Image (cartoon, rainbow, N blue to C red; front, side):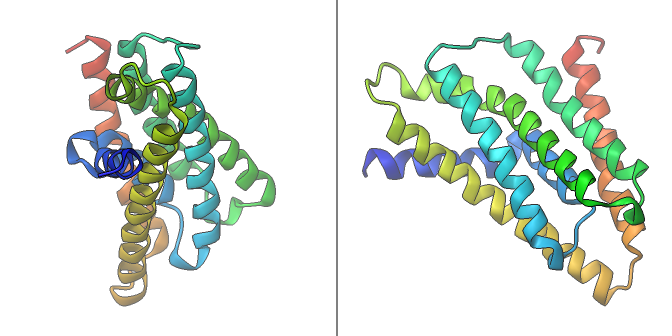
Length: 195
């Protein structure tokens, strides 16, 4: 197996690993307000998120930045919490070009945080490799493929719920966002050392 395919599989496996459910929950919460016909908006959001976590993965792998793992582990559920609150607060009629741009910027920033969460795992894999560009690219490509699969599942579920079961879109958004909100609160308390 080549180094490229090994890191591609590792990236893919890392994002779809149910033990890394906080990253999956972020993607679910991020997509909660979208329907399948809005896939272009979701693709831009996920790509912005990927650019963010690719940036911090590279910087952390090169030891340019180093942030305490405990802080990062707290910030990851905070990103889910903020995304869920935004989904619940903003009505579908409020969506505009400016709001979409703000969401893209937020996804990029939150990607920076999530990338720090992946960085310790990737750094341990890279070890003392001289050239990290190919493994880093492959790992991120694997993450992106995994994210696209998760997004596809969420948008397909939204299509079934909204079109076949005739659930109101606002109710669907509230269910997914409420789940993200509840789990993120628990994670923040656990990771803050209060529990």
